[in-house]
Length: 129
Image (cartoon, rainbow, N blue to C red):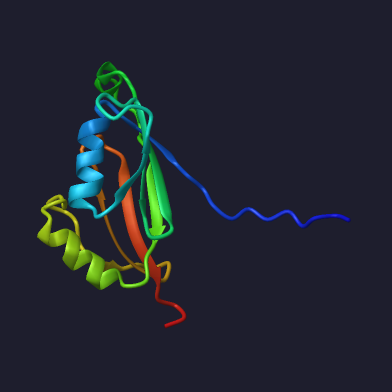
């Protein structure tokens, strides 16, 4: 019997220079919880989870940030975009240009960078309200 192929999850790996600091940011500021860590005192690889979203954090030498390169930009679908915007606004994670806005491509979204220059965009489709 042929089993249907179905892709159902993705776990992006974000580069960070300090996994403990990254865990602190994602857990205490963004509301994720720790899913796993390869070491409890000095992790080099860990995962955080919130609802159905799992993000992995991997240590990279801080010298890599001396080179100007594009870092990953994640787009995360969110149901209550306004509530999440308010939640994160109270946690002081936004940058001066972070706004909740409607886009020409039919989404309502906001975006900011984590402390390691990884981009996070949270959005919902507004074309089929």
